[in-house]
Every structure is written in C-alpha cells, then in structure tokens.
Amino acid sequence: MRPQDAPDAEHRDEPPQAESGSTISPQRLSLAGAGVELGLVVAVMTLGGWWLDQWLANRNPWCMIVGAGIAIVGGLYKFWLRASRAFDRPREKSSK
Image 1 (cartoon, one colour):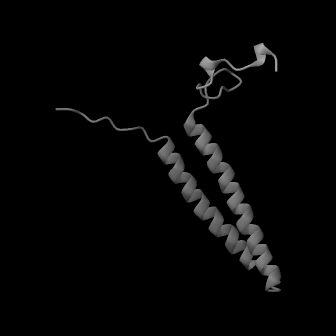
Image 2: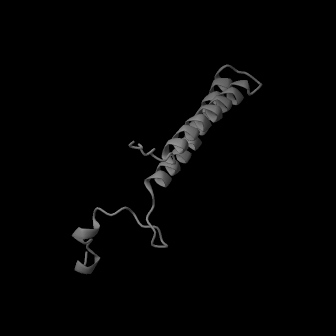
C-alpha cells in the first residue's frame, strides 16, 4: 500500500460517501438492509414450502403458496415498521 493510498486519520470516522459526494444516511442503509432481508425471507419460506410439498408428495403447491404468502405479508409489515421508524422525525418538546 502506498502512503497516498492510506486512509487519513481525520477521515476514518466519516460516514461512507456516495459517488456523487453526498453522504449515505443511516436511514437509507437501514432500508437497504430491510429490502435484502425481505427478499431472503420470501425466498427461504418459498423454498421451504416447496420442500414440504415434495416431502408430503403433494401434487399441488399449497405449502409453497402459503409459505410465500406468510413471508410476503410478515416481511412487508416489518419493512413498513422499519421504514416508518427510519423516517420518523423526533418531536421537539415545547417549553411553556
């Protein structure tokens, strides 16, 4: 590593920078993580339902449909809660 490539001590505590030079807010990072989590939960529940259908020798994909439905409803609810918390502005207390 060349000395000019080494990170400066004064820049170590700064938030990550987007390519345009603006900082990436923690709210956006939280929502990106929630989106990935939603996708993974839906995939795992759908595959689990498919596996259960195969194990039960069921010709209809009802377990897969139910698993995907539960994952979508529950995942979107959790995503909604996280998004509302991320963008909820703290209320200022008014002093009288």
